[in-house]
Length: 194
Image 1 (cartoon, rainbow, N blue to C red):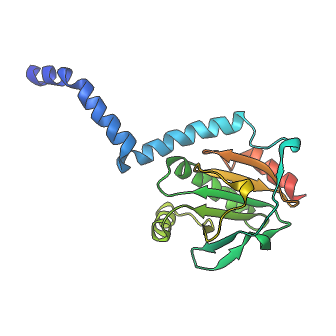
Image 2 (image 1 turned 45 degrees about the horizontal axis):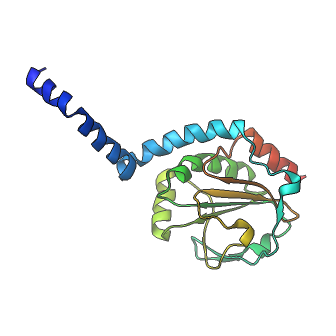
Image 3 (image 1 turned 120 degrees about the vertical axis):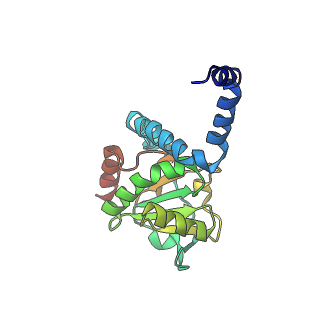
């Protein structure tokens, strides 16, 4: 290699690394890498820490009146799912932790979609969501809020996920990505379905 080029490279290495970091952190080019890194970390933490809430700390939903609209524009209300096990996930297509956990949610939905109500509530434009689902080959049921979520499920962070039991108690919650297809989550759902 040209010695002059190596000298220029050495002098500007910090600038090159800084520009690379900016591209990684703040552009769409870094999104898949960030999502993969988050996925690896979140899957380890899911195995180490419980998503389940201690019984004495579980909160009961007081109001099930929450209007949602599906991608197919069908209107649903949380009230119609009262008495069922419900998984609610708030997410967006531009959110790296959301992207990281979606494949595990897809697997969980494929296995439990007949027994558990899944509500993937997107904080995004419907057209972007459609493109995202097609590109990632996801079949999860996506909804958009048309009224405010119950106070017990208010969060300003994405992703945020809640598991609600048949009696209306939030038995698990997680802010940030997790491995939703883990044995812990499956055991929790199986317990709630009994």
